[in-house]
Amino acid sequence: MISRISLLKCREGVSEEAFRDGMMGAVHDVIAAMPELRAGEINFVTDRQQRSHLGRGAIDIDGFIEMFFDSYGDMEEAYRQSGDALLAALEPLVEEPLSTLVAVKKRDTLVPAYLDGKAIKRVSFCDRKEGVDAATFHDEWWYTHSLLVKLMSGYCGYNQNLVIDRLVQGKPVHYADLPVEGMVEFWFEDMDAFDECYSTTGFKLRASVHAAEFIGTVTTYFVQAVPVELKK
Image (cartoon, rainbow, N blue to C red; front, side):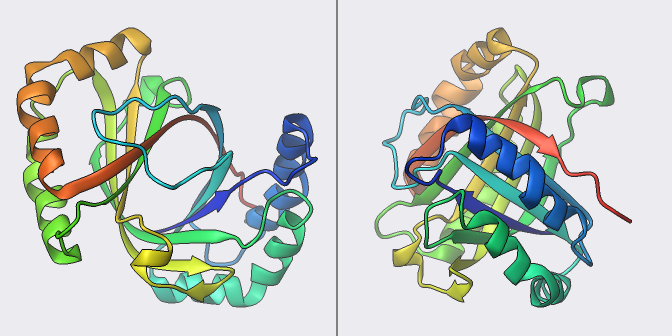
């Protein structure tokens, strides 16, 4: 599955209430009518405290839009038809230029149905450690690190999003211009479960040690994810 993640920074002078209203109004309506879209959600940052043993990176956001497509071609067709309308709806609400990550999503651990819409969601934007290339990051993260995460307890959902393209105002840019190699999604039943997860031996002696070998910085946020009801 292809995931398109548009990073949003609230425009100066726009209140948090106005930002949310606009995102759930005109922006939501454009996304809901987008062709080829399989699913979408608008994520609002609720907590930006850094919660990582690694340093914080350059990503500074108030929210993000995530849209899911079956293929890269479907995503391009959707934006050919609706991209201008989406940018027009976003223009009065967010700072420009608009930065976007295109990723391949790996659903590692699905959130149980009984927690759907109730679990706490945390996202982390990861870049590469100096000297680590994209292929090494991919192999270490998707294979070895994925196995090590399974040694941790407390979480109820886990996704990995491997970045395959980076766009600024719709134009491809180099990694150096938008240094994100992956986005992690974790879900927890509550903050006690979060604390449990990051106090486990699996994290402290396994996953965190391994992460420091190939990840440079990790920028963390808690978010409220609001699904978009598609007009189909």
